[in-house]
Length: 74
Image (cartoon, rainbow, N blue to C red; front, side, top):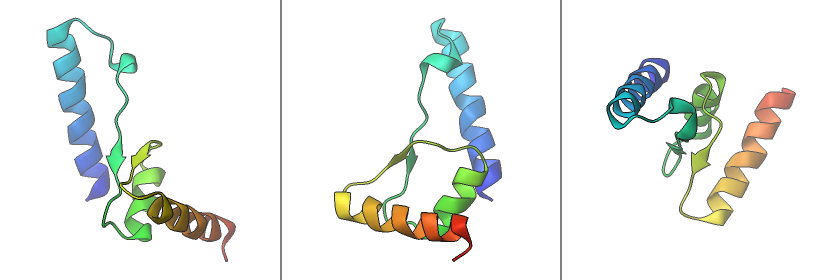
């Protein structure tokens, strides 16, 4: 599900860039992680998302620690 959604958003960004005469590489896609569980963020990361937005610093710190544990297999 996440993979399909990311692909659709990327296609929309590319189309918008073409209409605006911009390069897609000039645009940063930010995945919103607010209220999303860590496994969903990991899935988005595995699908190429690298920039995440969160409202609260403590939330992203906690999620980042959880993602590091998942990556390390802990």
